[in-house]
Image 1 (cartoon, rainbow over the protein chains, first blue to last red):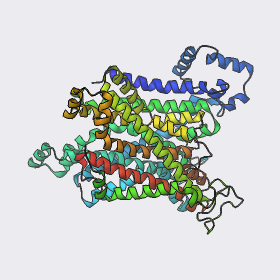
Image 2: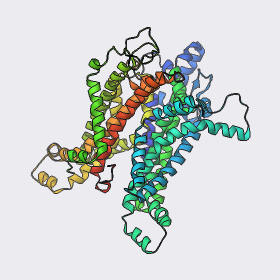
Image 3: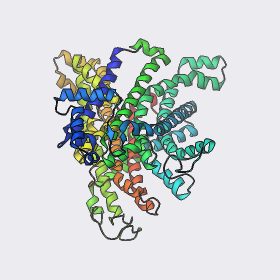
Image 4: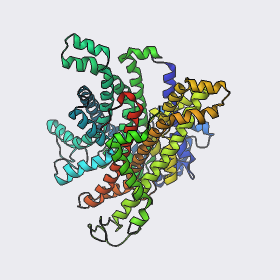
Length: 323
Length: 281
């Protein structure tokens, strides 16, 4: 069962992120407003605006009131104003979010399911040539830095053979609608997703395969064979289902790692998601957007971990008794 | 927990390959000033030169010798990797053993914080910090080790807890051994292989992060790094230069990470008897 103990964990994690977000700009030497808003803002700064901002961040108040002011603006969904994009930071971020969700969602689904199926098949045929080559191949791929794999795909399929577009998520000014638009989006999605899948499929594959190896030795597998069940049923319903658990418990941690991968891959392909936005914000010192993206990404990862925590005691009843 | 590392390595070709590559990289890193024909930062008017006898890998957009940069890049990569991993392993060992031995409130609070850090994506914190303080090499090492010890501390704590129940430890305790004595004479020696695995994976994490952060352009721009080389080369990927500018640092980085992965997998396989004879032959 889910406990207060677990909830406390997520609150602590959230607090660490909020505290860092709050403290870092305010600890910088010089005008904290510049650290909060970036250089771009100073150009447009009038005394009236400045007074308003000082008031809003409670910069003339003690630190705990500043922290309270910071939290209360956050809870109203106000992430600040990006002077670089000339729009509220939240609006800029929400505009980019769908592309990242598309990228992460597609990768997560394909690499998890692909990894599980490959893991089950590989574990079943343990020590065979197929098993060994798959194991070596995926381990080598997993050892590649995501962005280098992305670069190789970009050079191969984008530059040399020019089969796939070099950058972006849609063809600009194409005016595509309906099926043509979907195809265009998929065409742009293909290389970044492939790079991410190749790097990440190994994790769920290895976990499934290793559990498969232990599960296959269980007495109930012998019973299943004695009952005359087909290989397919044994492999997937009896062994596979039990090999799923470690994969699911690791999905949350996987997601955290994948965020890093997505960030790099988006930059390589200039894919207009949150990763590329982070990169742009770093280059232009657009602090409200930078802080906003990182906050939203962290919250997403925490929520995903939370959901995994909630769900896996349902998948494996043994965990309920263990606590 | 007693495994012979030498025997394990002998049995696994992947581990031999890993050690060979890592030794090669270490040699390059150590002797970079002797091997490189040019100072890696020296800019010349001869930009975008293709490979020739004077510049084996040509020159980049500001006329720097690419081979020299590649050799010095190994230095940065391995220095960050080994130092950050060493610090992180020391932190993991200190916190893991002390929480297990002392227990109580100290254990509970520390482990809560550790768990909280495990679920926060590390890259988020690093970018956040790096956006405000452009990290120098040593700040980067410190940052990576401060964010890299938590997982290891969990494993070491669990292992220490089970060691604590063993006969020889309670025997030592009944003779009046202090926690410090127990740690240094009984627990740490037994934890050796686990610490080694933590160290190896720590190296991999740190090398990867250093290259990634340099690729993002958020580390000190004066440091010669494979990540920086790749980012600069990527801007010119439509030219032929990627063949000798972009690929070499990418391959060097991948080989280094791969070699560490292979060593780590072999050791890990040896630690987990269920997976034994499993790792790739």
